[in-house]
Amino acid sequence: MFRVEINKIPPSVNHYWVQTKNYKFLSKKGRMFKEELGLLAKKVIKKPLIGKVKLNVLVVLADKRRRDVDNFLKPILDGLNKIAYLDDSQVYELTVSKTISQTKSQKTIIEVCELDD
Image (cartoon, rainbow, N blue to C red):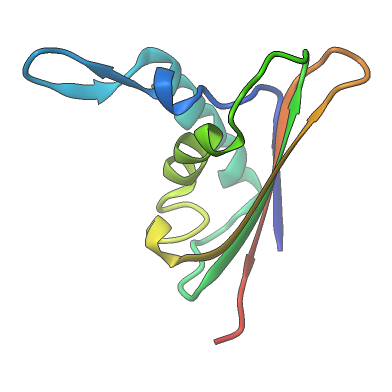
């Protein structure tokens, strides 16, 4: 099992992409989160898993604003592509939780493990 902790929360899917008239591309916030998560993940993950994968995600929020828990997933899954696993299609189990920080700090904790076939 691998555990990655990043001291920020992912941009919601609403802020992950930028849509223009002709194009859809990753936002600056999206790129920054993906790059930082990738760098942290590479410190603890030596090579991508090749089998079925399970992710446990805990998003620790600094405040009580309403946020949909499913909107956090795409930046996390994309950020771990080719690092924790070859492709996010390998993810067969996914648990996502959110909680409010007691210290007003925010972070995301991700645990990745390979499932038995």
